[in-house]
Structures are given as C-alpha cells and as structure tokens.
Image (cartoon, rainbow, N blue to C red; front, side, top):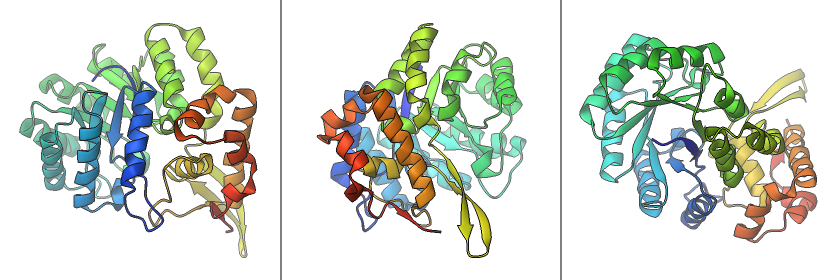
Length: 344
C-alpha cells in the first residue's frame, strides 16, 4: 500500500434500492480523473452491511475491473464471522484486488487477543500474497484489536503492513506507531483528523481512507501528497478550505419530538449521500434502516456547502465539470432539496 488518499466509495442505488451500474462507473471515473490513490469498494461508506454476498462480490468485481491499472483497488471483506470473511477475501482475491480491508468483528465482542488469533491470523495465513488492512473502529464494532496485537501481526505477517485507524484516540495511534515501527503505515479513517495525525510527529500517518473524498477527491489527494512531501503550509491552505466538509461525516442535531427533546445523529454515509444527491452526483438514497436526515440536519449540511461554495468555489468545480451541473443552482434551487429530509 502506498501513501496517499483512498476513497471509501459509496454504492449508488436507484430509488428502488438496486445498484445503479452507470452511476458506479461514473463515480469510479470521477475518482480516477481526480488523481485518487485508490478506491475501497464495499466498506461502511458503501453500505456493505445491507448487501447480500452476491451483491457484495459484484460491486467488488466491478471496481476491480473498472479501476484496473488506474489506481489501487481495495475490497472490504470483513465480517463478524471468520469463515464468511475468509471466503469473501478469497473471492475478492480472485478478482485481482490489491488489498482487502478487514473490519474488527462486530457485535459478538471478541477480545483483542481473539481478534488477532481467530480472525486476522486465519486470513493472513490463507492469503499470504494479498495485502490485509485491519480496520479499527470500536465506535461501530464494539470491539477493538489493540496496538500490541496489531504489532504482533505486523511482525509475523508481511502482508499486514498498515492499518485504517478510526478510533479517534490519539494515544492509541501513538502506541501503534511506537509498537509497529516507522515503516508501518497508518491511514486515517476519520476525515476530521487527517491533517492533525499526518502532522503529529508521534503518529506520522501517511494518508487516509476517506469519506468526503467521494465529493472532493482532487483536494483530498493533493492535501495528502503535500503533507507527505513536507509542505505543511500548502496542505494547510487546502485543509482550511475543505475542513467544513470534513466535519459533515457525522451531523448531530437536537430535535423536538412530541414527548420532548431528542438527540439525533446522522452518521456516514447518510450526510454524504444526501450532499451528493443535492450536488447532482450519482448516489441515490441509502438502504434501510438508514433513511433521511432531519430538516435541521439537512440545513446544517446545506449551509456548510453554501459557505464552502462562497469562499472557495474551486472546491466543487471538479463536480460541475465532470457531472455537468451548476453548483449554484443545485445549492439554491429548492427543487433539488425535495425529499432529502423528513421531520422528526
């Protein structure tokens, strides 16, 4: 895996919730045209938890084929069932992907030791020629492989040489760097922290597996490139311009129900796909049980996009050119906001 920015690609659906094949091809081409380092298919952002395995394998095959020789291709093949993960990794390997992303097992709650021995080691041994990227995100999985066990994996398996770090815990990341060594690659799995952990001398992340690069791949890739080249000032200018968008991966609002106030959290990929629909990109709705943002949450997203467009119109320009849309019209014509939110 080379340093840089990888896009955790959304899966575009039509209104019936089926794969939008043409939209998928357009999104892949958009990423490649804007110099993305690589594309991750069927991750959390791609709504893999809602897939049947046949769909899962099909999307991976499409990304593997359409992005071949154009960028690095990663397949999300993790599970809370080791046998399922093993089989999925094997099918992805047959499609010729460059790496597989393995999320820590979710819900059933294995310890860090169990995750290492009964999950990652099994798959690393089975596919020694496939790069394996552990994905550490305890906020979604309820479990976590710790830096100590990650370091053991890195020491014993040459095909485990990087991690997608989405703990949000800087101390955890510092331990990963300390135990895994300077040659081990840390990729940010949290858009809001990319700049910080790439410039932190105790973490030294080398890039990201990003959500918002679905929309702004050119600038996300440029920022990672500049940081890896040591141009902190140049990267900082980009970061300042795009930071409001990076903070939209999760949108929190306080809503009023008939029984009183309610805390509402719109999580990835809901804000992202809502923004993509607003901007005129392929995406479509999320699959249930994800639904729509609240009206208040939607306006947080809309106001942020309008602010970015007013201050830095170059950020959305690649979208306008590639998808032939008028960004100002998309952001200001209420016709394009219909059905993108619902009341509590």
